[in-house]
Image (cartoon, rainbow, N blue to C red; front, side):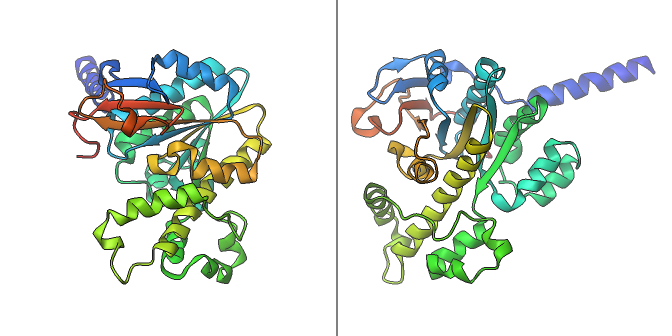
Length: 302
């Protein structure tokens, strides 16, 4: 019986270890926005003077996801005793916040949490380690995004279509009317969409798609601002797709509309074949810090 127990315990340890997200520092390089190579310690040190750090990702970047976990853990280790550290996520929508909270409080099982919260398909490999760390340390997790059904609604019918929603539905959104995108963000978005054949046809409506994108940004900015206003000496680590925060545009701009004095840092992560080389033409200014990861690594979720 003892041998069977020990064998069972060993299998459990192996399974946990195999599923753990680890960071190999040889697989990424950190630069400041001008291209100077810096250390993780220097990046973490900058959090002492900021309220929010945006970690802009490629969603299928496994190395980038492991780096996010490292930053989150280091932020808690360095500042958790005197500051209210929290995780904020594009990957969960505002209408499931209470479900996220129930799971963090151990009121519901992980099985029911996943069945009810609409997690992304790569949740278990890429985002679960961060949520579990937050749960272990009793940290808040902010479900920051707009419900995707309303984002889709705007992309089809425009921002004014939200006015027809019930009070209960509007409570899952930022206050209406939500802010418009800046000229710089609009130009960047149009440039991106022009490269996509499906978006450049006669039947496409770039304006409505931009409005839906801006609803995303406004929702995340508003969700973060609410936490900042109620927490004691807060430090929020926010995860989002890189486009939402590159060059300090998008979500950070919307956040400033809700809380003007917010101090933030943008960390933009990209995978590159030559991840040791900072190319000013591609990378300069896309973040306060730019993390280049090894593009030869397997894509996340594959």
